[in-house]
Length: 310
Image 1 (cartoon, rainbow, N blue to C red):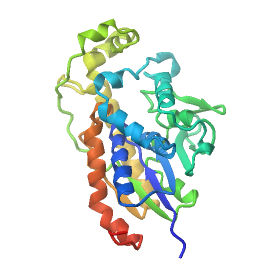
Image 2 (image 1 turned 90 degrees about the horizontal axis):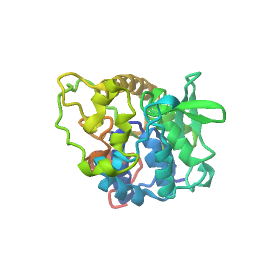
Image 3 (image 1 turned 90 degrees about the vertical axis):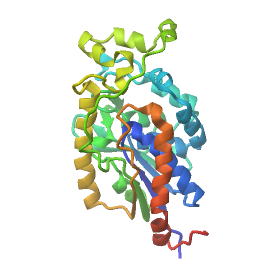
Image 4 (image 1 turned 180 degrees about the horizontal axis):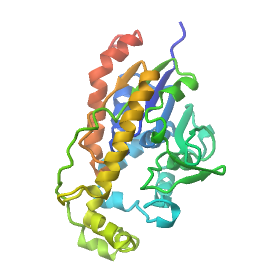
């Protein structure tokens, strides 16, 4: 019998998306390597880097990135339709030395985005990989949209948060889906302790404090002192409201899409305590990604007709 083509659908989840790294590590160690990779939002970023053969480099970077390193990737872009322009992220992707074009990848890959004008789901399967990733991660309200072939594209999580359907369309016989949107709702918005910015950062051009100074006063009050990563006040902050609104939307869309397009196996990392912009918490997310695979590995092995020794 022909070996089934394994498709891996990596879902959206902002900072929770670092869990995809742990998922890939655990699957590969178990001898389950995807033949097709599809990603939405952070799933597109991790999947695209993996398909480029730069997975280890990304893991090392994520494991060592603290708040200051993450903040260095943020560039203000109020006039471009979002808080963050995203040029530094493109530069960072280039530094990872990912493939130039999607068609150069050894594995079939697609990044899912949304046409901002029509609401149409867009599968990016050719062209510059970095811009496809940048389009797929363009969370409305945070990242500016990306113009690709005359279409303004934003985050694919608006239409297909866990892209099982795309895996099947690319020829997958067996689809493993990684859903980071399970049980997101119901978590109370509680004040969090927030670290103060390093005084040394004041000497660095283009840093976080420069970004805050360029913001409107009301917004600057929310995000100064790294409040982007948590709100110490008694009421929800800007990013608390935005993040939970996106969680509500993606929870409903994810449930609807997966009910109509169920994968063969669903991996559910328990990462609900990692906030929208908690990109400095990669070690926790990666470890939970590995643990989530271990919880369902016997099911995957059984459905693939393999024994654990294989």
